[in-house]
Image 1 (cartoon, helix red, strand yellow):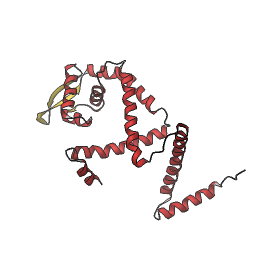
Image 2 (cartoon, rainbow, N blue to C red):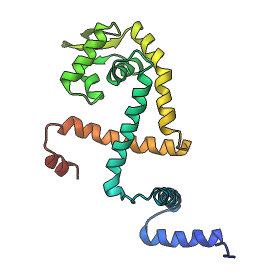
Image 3 (cartoon, rainbow, N blue to C red):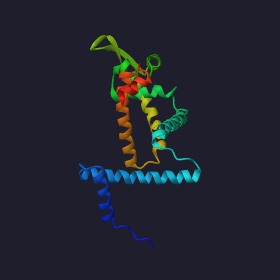
Image 4 (tube, rainbow, N blue to C red):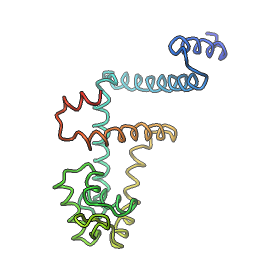
Length: 217
């Protein structure tokens, strides 16, 4: 029988590797690095088992991360479409716009469109549709007479609250395979990406991809 490695010896060896790679690292950084590597090893083990079982090919993060995000997004839209069959929703954009107004309060039309990463024309169509259905109303911006703000109406509140329980089911299905700590880590990682690309999208959306690349790297 193979003798188990003494945990203290394992930690000492891990510290030696960490210290060589990070001469100025402290104990807190070591703990974070050690736990991160352990978690990554566990994920890789699960992935390798799945790949072996299905006969697939391993993908590297450098060329597989974007594809994984696209695939998860497609699953998200699949579950949303299933949910919307039972709800009075024309499309997910209506829900997203109205949800922002409900949870964040009144805002300028341009701000609402920008928050939902929409083109101005399509975003305006969504807002006009919500106004026509009585879910949203517009009013003069108190800080800028040239601008309009929009806010949710009581009918809109009733509508969004009637939809919300079923829409929450989408999250339950999509993320049920993740542990609570994994969900939290994923949230913070995606939030970091969102913060970064929010500024990139706002400031560089008119540039070509080569010019964007030069500015962000």
